[in-house]
Amino acid sequence: MPDTSTGSDTSKRGTGNTGGGGGARLSRRTVLAAGAGITAALTVPTTARAATLDERRLQALISRMSLQEKVGQLFVMRVYGASATAPDQADIDANLSELGVRTAAELIQKYRVGGIIYFTWAHNTQNPHQIAELSNGIQKASLDRPRGLPMLIATDQEHGAVCRVGEPATLFPGAMAIGAGGSAADARTLGRISGTELRALGINQDYSPDADVNVNPANPVIGVRSFGADPAAVAELVAAEVKGYQSAQVAATAKHFPGHGDTAVDSHYGFPVITHSRELWEKLDAVPFRSAIAAGIDSIMTAHIEFPALDDSGDPATLSEPILTGILRGELGYDGVVITDSLGMEGVRTKYGDDRVPVLALKAGVDQLLNPPSIDTAWNAVLKAVQDGELTEARLDESILRILRLKSRLGLFDGVLVDRKGVDHAVGTKSHLATADRIAERTTTLLVNEGGTLPLNRHTQPRLLVVGADPDSPSGTTGPPTGVLAAALTEAGFTATALPTGTSPSAATIDQAVAAAQDADAVVVGTYNVSASSSQRTLVDRLLATGKPVVALAVRNPYDVAQLPGVRAFLASYCWTDVELRAAAKVIAGRVKPRGKLPVPVQRADDPTKVLYPIGHGLTY
Image (cartoon, rainbow, N blue to C red; front, side, top):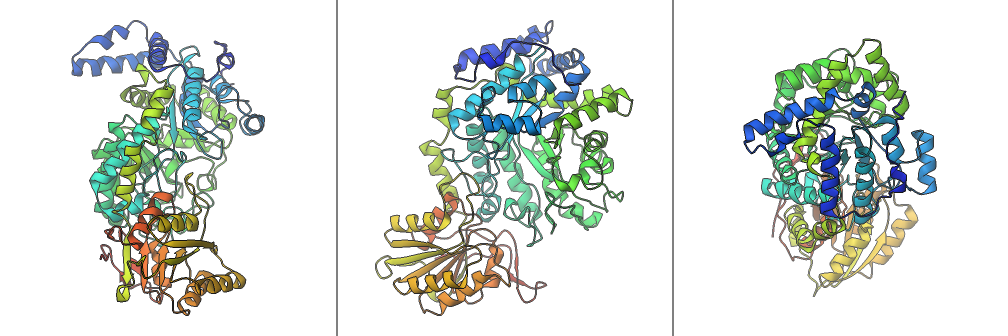
């Protein structure tokens, strides 16, 4: 059964600001008490000896843990609520329904989990001060337990299409945009600034960067989350971003091993199969992961994919000993933390029940079990596996040592609490925001510019109509895209009007856009995942027929250009977050020159075996 031993009542302490110095002393004293007898080693200045003694200290911590505490340390769980002890009633109800506890503090008390993952939909990331207080509340709830340990607090802050912490935090272009910019220095700066802001919020592990090489234009789950299709270029940017995060004392996570870049199935909803040969895997998928390991990657996330060339058992890579222990640990020499992708995803649940998945993952070589559907089912399954002899306690100790090493490297044993002053000094500063804008301005890619359609001229073409798709904001930015574009173009000296037409505009909506175009000097249309049957094509064709200059901007996949051959000016921003749209607007207005280069090839729509625009294509003014 879960650990229900008593400790100090964290529910009475709240999650308010405790101040930086006092918080650090509290955390350090509480944690080091668990390793009494060897804490004096912390004062030894010699680096080599300190490292050895630190290992002894971690081993001592493990030796004092109960089996139940060891099992808990392997789990990283979601939890609803903006507070660790006093969430809203709706979040309490959700926690009771899904987790069997009321709050994050109760989750930690009952299961002694080693980590928490933040999600926007779980109401964990409402604003910077709230996030910081939630982090402090989580850390206190753990540290106040008997033999309490600091927590790994993680999130998916990839930037671009996947972000959990939104404005006013600094948001950067996504991976494929960074790939278009091609600057390792920019990737490292992204990691450093993003890491600095996350750490100020009490978040010490980021599930980024994506190390997948996206070679399938139809990939529904990776796509623009990847730096591109060239494994060497991806490898360089992955390593750079890892170094950036590490400089801010935030654990980076390369994902999704052994490589999720050539799938046509989303592993959230199905079970993808990668048909690459072992030779192709070595040349393509493995390259960025080798680079990440060489850069000292802190953790590697598994993929819920079948990869027959690496393991013909039919098991997903997450549950594959040949892949995780044989290849990742054995051949690639990686001895850091291995974490599963979410165990609630369909790709890992198609073959085995939720009680078997966590046990098989540990047997395969995993260290951290991320977000199982039922913590009670998974936690008890691991405990029973040890009690029945299927898993040994020594096997758990191996993973716990890796997890504690990571916590030690991040300095979590020296203090984990954050304060309001640190948040205000680090999160969304003018300098950080300006840097993100400058990086974004190096990523916008001009694919087509016939007849010098671009840049538009605010003197001869002052009235602009902005139409197109308005997908939901992916990362807490202001949105919607048409509004952001219109505002940015107006700021650049035009008079721009936004008219959202959606991803599947109706005939009536298209008629409305065509009528509005009559009063404009030029039209900017944002496209989103255009297919051969998409009514977005009809919209663009009808706008072109007006004779007005039409500028198309792919706000997600650059592959849209192949479906719109009549467009005389076409750009790619690779995402629809504000920072990328502002940069695209500056390029359209001629305020900055387009400098991005395609990081993926674009195939012809009528013959996908032929390349329309190769990697490296990109025009300028």
